[in-house]
Figure 1 (cartoon, one colour):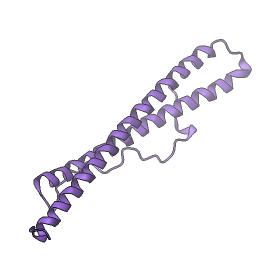
Figure 2 (cartoon, one colour):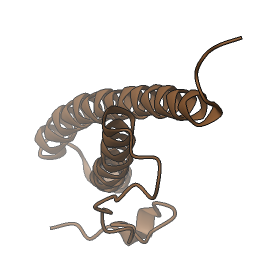
Figure 3 (cartoon, helix red, strand yellow):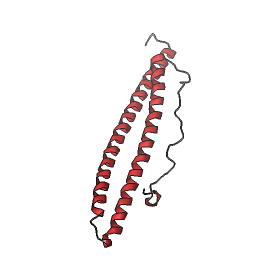
Figure 4 (cartoon, one colour):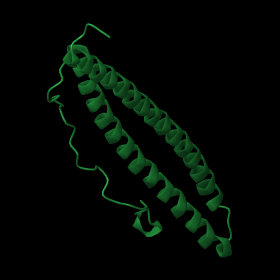
Length: 139
């Protein structure tokens, strides 16, 4: 048996759990940051495609013009999606880091009672739940 009191053991377990949770939250934040970079790269590719389509539009005969216009609208919708996704990712990362910091402070400082978190504004920065092709205004 250990010479430690039950409160000391519980405190050590709580601190370890808080530290482990902090690590997981920070790892999730890092993965969200990586996802944001992947989305940014995808948008760069979309912008390239958009530029190519725009350049081709000058040489297209009238019968193909509506199809091109549809493709350009789809590209703009995808760009709107990236902007919304980036806002959501950044907001989620701020929330994760805020909770991770709180847990880290609790683990290091031995704070077992009511961890004070400087809560990030919980309001979702993006109200839309889906991207509709008709929801994008071009130019």
